[in-house]
Figure 1 (cartoon, rainbow, N blue to C red):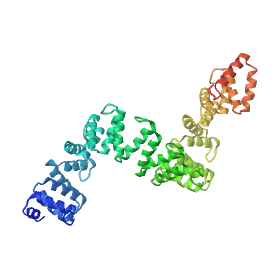
Figure 2: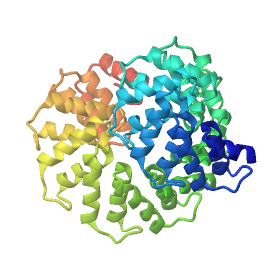
Figure 3: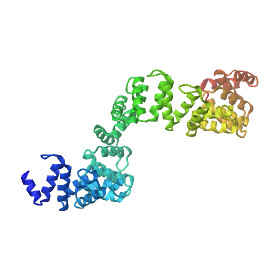
Length: 478
């Protein structure tokens, strides 16, 4: 140590750097960042690139010296221009993120390229990111793959994950599921959360590996235990549905509470449903409303619809039709089909809003297009009767047909009437009889009467044909 001090005092830059390093690390000397910075200054001023780099770090963090990002950049540039790979990497990051300098992805790529070429794995990874996105360099998946392969072979987990995705998608490299799984597995085993989640997906779906829900659950759980709310939410779903583990609502609650406490709206909504139904937790409408409201305020449409229902029924919140309408409107505007149908009913019947056939038809149409059967029936009725829309029997038949095929008895009956009378469709007694028959089987008494009346105008052959068609398709696909 005495010899080192003598050499440092005599102005030998390598000794000055080493003395600074000992002070910085507290190795053989009391840790002293101020002394470390002082010796690094001396060595750096003589062109020692390692000292320049370490001094840049101290300026950047403010350890042992006043924080100064501009000075940090200067020291990094001094070291980088001498070929110091870590300094080149540091400069690349600073230009990439715009820290201490104006963001400049071309400059970032320039410095990262130099560091990557010297084997710095994080630089290789980030350079691959730039090539993949075409930022600062031309977009080039092959180049991205080249750099990620180099970093991946040095056990860079992020590079392993991204390389696996390239093999999975066949971008920049030939599509190869076994290579994809191999790299993703390596990243997952190092704790990379994206890789762990994706590996769970692969086992869940049987892509590139044999389908195994138990293994999928195990990988999802590793991510969830790292605090990932999306994984925690998904584990709740799997526990609720008994996939990969025995069905367990209590465990579903546990995982959803973890995700919900981090603000995950899906978990908040589902937790609210469990409190509402008393599954996995004691039934508690107050808790149900509280969690549902948190999700609704984040714009989660299903929660907004359900919160509207709670306000309408006065469960867990004071009964308030105006609040119910506000939440249903928000959900409907986001495309929630059930909320759209509900708004259609309110405008149709003038409940809580002025009666408005035009608005009713608009909302029924939106819900019907998303497959809400009662909306399809109601929209058909509005087209048949010219309520809120121009009368159009062909459109009426189209919407009745969609609802009828899903077993809605009134739609089956009304569609039968259109076929009987030849409105919007070709007159067809056999098809009319089929729909009357199906509606009657679903409990529609008017349809049963219409069927008997119609049968008096049909031949025995026609009735036999209709009966056979009804038996072939009792679900309404007439």
